Image (cartoon, rainbow over all chains, first blue to last red; front, top):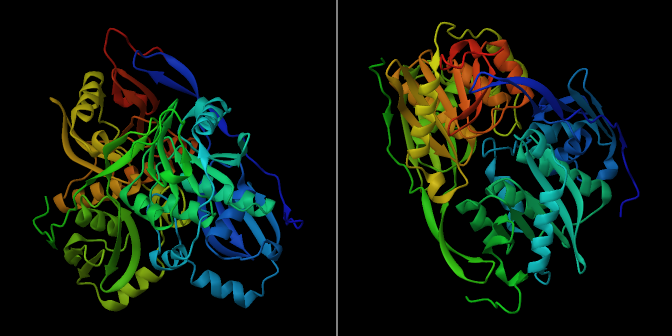
Length: 281
Length: 281
């Protein structure tokens, strides 16, 4: 566990807003929609990027973004993170020499959402050297418990739709224990925010399970791998490249997780199906 | 209509791939998953970006990306677009002087998927000056026809899931006529590809309807506005910022479009509901 924590503001936004809409019969209805705000990250006063976010965990999102872009390697180098919604910006202050930060941001690679913006080479080089723990496993009844915990967890999605959720569970003998649950307008923000929280808490991924409502495209598998998590579960599906990257680092992928159904796409050796059924491969 | 067309390769990829998965009872099933491939765009030999794409319309995607990033202003300046899947790259050749291209790509703003990567200011300046046609309208029965056309259109989504679709319809007196239907692993690729096709065909947006399976976040509304299309329809929902941008340019937004249901979020004055029901606002 880390003992060091940077000074963080605590400026989550209200997550939903009530609006009036008109239905197909001409009747006015009040519904909730999720917020979305631009948040521009300044790293030692240098403008990095503008993220569009729900704003539920802006400090964690900023931390995770900086971590996943490999702009800062050690949490202790971050002095403070101050979110200011009056200017839609967040100021990150580090103890890193100005010349080093300037050099890093100059060759910054935007690895970002929906498959646009990835500078592929650098990420892939790092990805190739990832090793996930082979000994860990996940029991069928624990998969069901996890799906049920997600189903019953209060969420913006149930209230307002239009957001993706990512969650991290501890993979305990007694069953999965929810550690983080983050929703955002983009899948990539949600996973970055979780990465930020893991960094703060000094949590490594080996005994964790990652769940997302979104599709497992290449970038989700890459980020899961970077966090060192051997299990990626989704309610949705998997793309071919997501799958082939998971094969490469021997990650276990479960998709179409819903109710008492799931499909094992990769890494079945880590899944303990109920004994009565056996594995008919 | 444009008469000029750049020389384009015709290198769509196979869109789905059969794989074996294991279900919760240990049974092997064969399912289809969508492809996903990196495609690195070179503009006059200068590396721009790597997009992760389904690969169904790589030439249109490249055109639309270059158009929406405002790297080339006139289609006649593009000489050729050659996609080469052996190197996962596409070469764009222009008649623009080398110094001009170098300057443009240097200050290129990555405006990209899932709300990560946007350089907000430049886009917003342009957005503020958009004007959408106020006189156009859309009849309730035509909304239903459009939803039905999407429902019955053959799609990768039905076969393999994990992709988003964008479609453009002509808003004719006789009913909506499907012009383009593009699916991709990211919403932003699908909308960029449609923008590319509109550019090729010299189609402006005023008498078109845009439909997407994805959420209407700020960036989808911005791209719809840039295409000059007054109607944005989605099966999914809308974020607060998507909505407030639509208000700003008086765009009509319909969400939760499914079967015989829809909700009008914005611009109800363009929607002609069935007379018997009237508009109870």
